[in-house]
Image 1 (tube, rainbow, N blue to C red):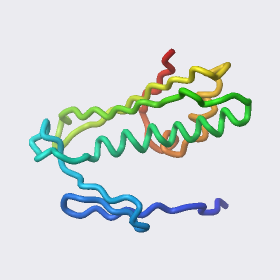
Image 2 (tube, one colour):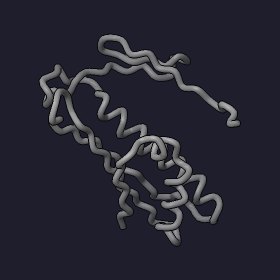
Image 3 (cartoon, rainbow, N blue to C red):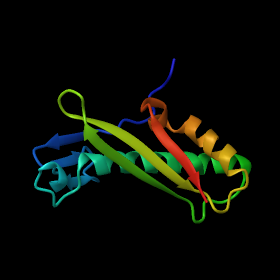
Length: 131
């Protein structure tokens, strides 16, 4: 049986999100490209941030097991919306990983992918190792 370690709670209201500990408070609007007002972050950016930061933290753990440094490492996240066949949108996710100071970067990335809870729960995320 697994033991809960941490729960993040965020409340979304019309035009904003706030975490229960008040560390995160953001205005959130639909992007202007989709007909919204823009001028604030949007759910797509938040999802890209969540996926990329989760993978970066998992890379930190994976690098720690083999030795090395994450100096200069980065994960760029992208969320793309497309018109769905029915109502709404379909989303695709892409992460580009840069690990300049890591030997066996591909192996480290695979270990990190197996650690990252978001990548384990969101299917179809394209993760590519860049130079």
